[in-house]
Image (cartoon, rainbow, N blue to C red; front, top):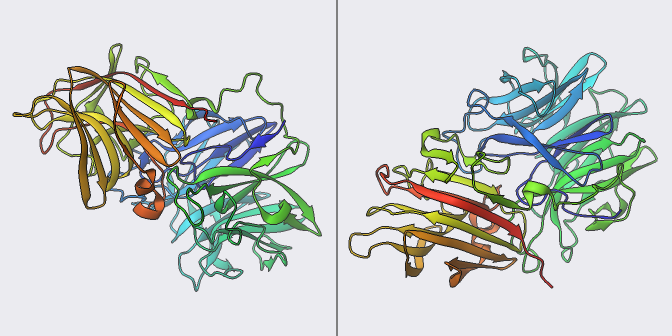
Length: 500
């Protein structure tokens, strides 16, 4: 079986992975989105099934005041002594913490706070001793480590274990043991085109760590013509047969180098071998396609990553796994019924935090989106479909009400301080809003008729400057006051499109 990268497309940054028996579990960052930290499982490292979210309660995750691209940064997922542990950082309040569960699909504990500076924490057990390693965000202190009681959060005395191979702003430390030697795998070079994976080794988990003579282990920073860039922030795992694998984040830029990317940082997979006691990825690059045997059989009927690739819902069964809110939601604005999803717009518009919004990742360059909307707005009320990077960068196709114009569909582009309505169409109370997406073009439709188009470039990280990717969402607003009229989405469809 061959596989193609990315193995988790769309906004899936900072992957962390562990194995229990013959099953692999993987989690990623979610920043300001709620619920936080999705968990997937797989028997072959390619077909990933969603099993739930680690942080699904406000008592675990408070991102009500999270800045854009704030909230939950890089997690580490580990299994020890029959229990799963996850550590991460809420950069918008609370700092580092640890949660645990008997099963990833079950209920996770409330957070145990860890009083240390910085971001990107790691957990590693050597016997009964747990080591907590993190980037202090102080270049003079670099990556620090201390012993940790994960049940209480009590830390020992920290000490520096890495100040960078070539970059003192080293991030994302992960610690491993192989044949009595301890390895530190670290991200350096920033989180964009200079991103890379470096390694060091030691006879002791506390260091000091000798840098790999062939660093970086993985980097695409010098290959301008490759279709994948910014590879880094890696985690390692072994299969049941003893083979090693690496997962990392990367981006797929458009329009050449350096180009721009709008799907966010995605999860990539590469086989890893060992030479002279050092980790090696062939050519130091993430393969776009690989025929290396996988640790498990492919699924009998591949379903294109399941919920990640395809959504067709009437919301009768509530909110599916793929749907996320921006920040902790006002739950009374969302009602899941047999007749569809009802949305009540609050006083906020889409260019403000706290708006009524429910979305899913855009996971394909080429896809088709349709939403059947029933809405009779009063003046100033609005609801529809949005392609959203953040509050300052989004494209909307929605239905508005006006005292003079009546009910109409509009297409509005928000690009920083530039706001432009590029299409208007009178519509009835029931309307189908749509988007046909290509790698370098969005086309907006009202009742099946194309009415406008726009470039994804202006929703990209290179323009917006954010860590996330485009979400395809449903929204409702009250334009300064709570809306009296709910919008009802009877059906929402997101599906990949195969192009020649």
